[in-house]
Amino acid sequence: MFFCELGTDRLFLKNIGKTDGEFILSQFSDPEITRYLFDAEPLKTLNEADEIIDFYLQPEPRNQHRWILKDKQTGILIGTCGFHYWNKDQSTVEIGYDLKVAFQGNGYMNEALRAIIEFAKNRMKVKTINACVYIKNAPSIRTVEKLGFIKSSSKNEHFRGEDYPHHIYTLTF
Image 1 (tube, one colour):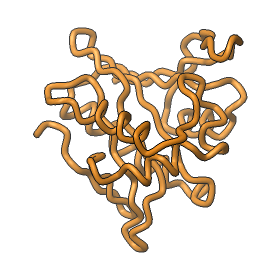
Image 2 (spheres, one colour):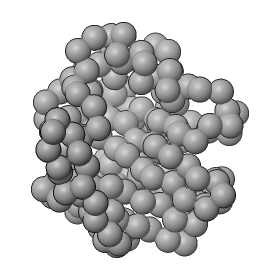
Image 3 (cartoon, helix red, strand yellow):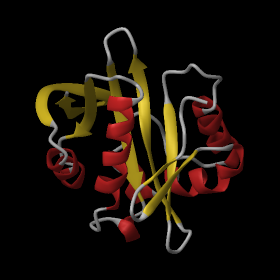
Image 4 (spheres, helix red, strand yellow):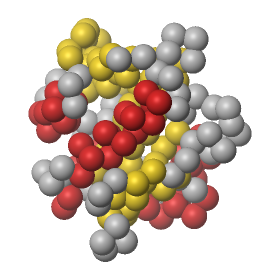
């Protein structure tokens, strides 16, 4: 298996699995977490959560992967992070991430993203990582900037009949 589980000082990054439906439903039905996600409506059913899981569990080799962040000390599932699209020919990948509100501001996502950035650089041989961030999502902007991402371009995401401006932040090796 190419996509393996990862660890940091405080976190265990487990591969998303068939038994994670309840967590994915709780995560992506939370209005605070979905507030800046402009690609899909908040989840309403376990079946919708299972569809997300199935997307990330397509047979390898695949162009996407998701890890669930588990606090090593408490065992609590606190968020997810991963890759939306890996373009092997261009050595690029886009990251995405989310964290339960109670755990925000404690450096957990920074720690998790450092681990998957190293995975992308060393195992996937990626040269460029992009993050598409809504311009009003200040915590996410701070996160990618702390990791060395640089604003490289902008685009609009069209969702619910409206345009939402996003900046593309890029990390190159």
